[in-house]
Amino acid sequence: MKALLSVSDKTGIVELVKQLKAFGIEIISTGGTQKVLQEAGIEVTDIQQVTHNPEAFGGRMKTISFNIESALLFDREKDKEEAAQLGIEPIDLVVCNLYPFEKVLREGADFETLIENIDIGGPTMIRAAAKNFKYINVLTTPDDYEPFIQEMKTNNGTTTYEFRKQLMTKAFNHTADYDALIAQTMDKENDKHSIRLAFEKGKQLRYGENSHQQANFYRQKGVDKSLFDIKFLHGKALSYNNILDISGAIASVKELEQEAVAVVKHSNPCGLAQAGQQRKALEKAWQGDPVSAFGSIIAFNTPLTLETAQFFDLTNEDRSKRKFIEVVIAPEIHPDALAYLQNHKNLRVLEYNPDNLPQNPDYRIVNGTLLEQDYDDKLYEKIEMVTGQASETDKDLITFGLKAIKNIKSNAIVVVGRKDDEFYLMGMGAGQPNRLVATELALAKARDFIRQDFVEDEKDFEDYYHRAIQKAYLISDAFFPFADNVELAAEKGIRNIVQPGGSIRDKSVIDTCNERGVNMVFTGLRHFKH
Image (tube, rainbow, N blue to C red; front, side, top):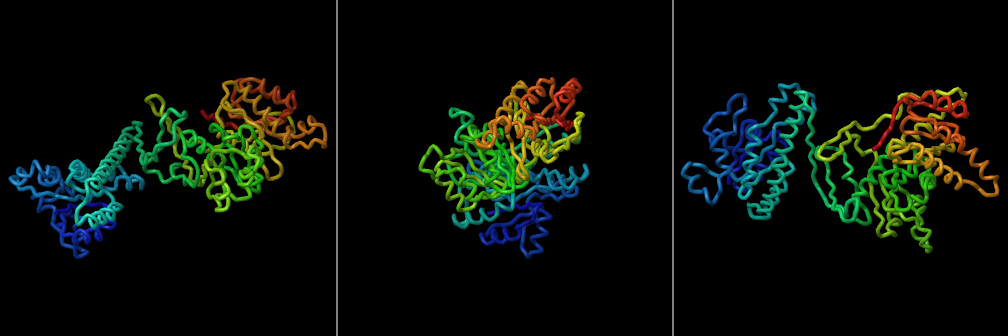
């Protein structure tokens, strides 16, 4: 057997060749690889003895030759006699990784350096060997070395067809990704916009948005962090909708402080809170909309404790009192909390750290097109009181509200409140074509939220409600085109409104606030989420 080696990344190459030698395999090598092997005391055959040509042009010409490509490509059965007539001896193994184009690109290399790191002979060898995988093994990364040696040991110095087929698949993906990066980089050099995305490790989901739709889940190649890396601990298989809701839930707690909890339904947080204690944060988040919380996704930004998990009352003999939820996800699930959650056999229990949720550009495929945009990583440009009332602005509560609203589908309105170090979503209106309807929904939910805190023998509820709502902030994801939202909010007792500003009717809206005794803050930044 003969092996052809030409690697830029020399990691593990000496150890591999020692193993190959033990199998009696002849080693053919190009210059740089040959030097490393010879320094390790390993005898190799110079590539020039096979090509019958010198390495030339500063190494640009090494392996590209009739002899090398023929040794890789000829069919060992039907082309055997022709190969013998031409003096072509088969090469049975190719070990090749390519010039480090991606590495020098990341390091900010200049254009000439990039060009010199475009491999030509390497992809040719890899593709030739992969095409003829019926007879040839092709190793494209150091990660392939140990599995290959184990395969050889298991099969008495050879490999199986299925093993070579897997190597072939990896090889073609390797060269495809390599060429895609080069093409995209060259497009950028020529002021052209192009994107070539690759995904791997695809697995089938339980179903799509509806049970009659099939769905799959993939990991994007080349990214360090991915939602694909969720650790599944317990429960039913995930569906397409579960993944979308999980993403929304993790995003909702990612930027929050203290102990934070999101209750997500249909990708929107219907409950959201942060507090000094995890159990208290969950209670306040659940209070945001206990009805919609049925069948929801619950996300935490800190390890989940048993005390918090017991809030779901999963072992109550009265089944009607058990809180039905679809997914619980946290950076870590304490063992006793996991054991408790496993009382619900179908409940999906997952581990994922919100800090690992990537802030990559957002992509969306729309009918044969691709939309790309930056991640929404800003909250506001300013906190400017634009009304005449003398009032101190609660910047911390505004910040919490903006973090909430950026994760809610537009048109979006939220009502948020606080008590000491506890911050919570009291009500929200999401995804409404009419902003006034969103405002009505948010205010109605806020009223329900306040009623849950009301103790019957305290005082009249209306008095209690108005004292509570006057401390809340109503926040809009975009400007108010008309004053009707202000009029409705004021009628329901709101005294603090936050919006981006920027409408041609800003003056009319501000005048209405002044007339109704409402404080209004402009942030200068919109948070649409479609």
